[in-house]
Image (cartoon, rainbow, N blue to C red; front, side, top):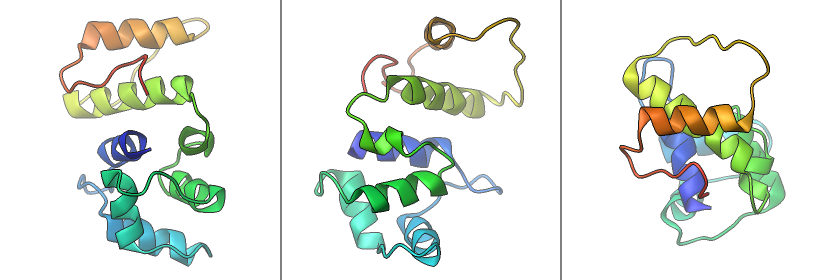
Length: 126
């Protein structure tokens, strides 16, 4: 859980480019009607708290524009690979990419291999 949540923070930054804080997430989730405090977000990010209710996890996912199953499913490989690619594209300054034909999971894995694994994230490990 902590690795997945940390990846969401690394990938989805605020419009001005800064990473959201735990307080930002907690405030947005609470304003959506689901009670959450920054200390709980911090505990989830650090691994001190291994899980939260599905409602809280879905609200956190919504804040990060990510399907809820990324934080609730035991093996969200497809979403994880997409997030890794988004992070690598953002970090390298890519603003758009156009692929021809049907996109597949193999395409994402191949792109991740080409871009390298500079930050230790694994396309196959979640």
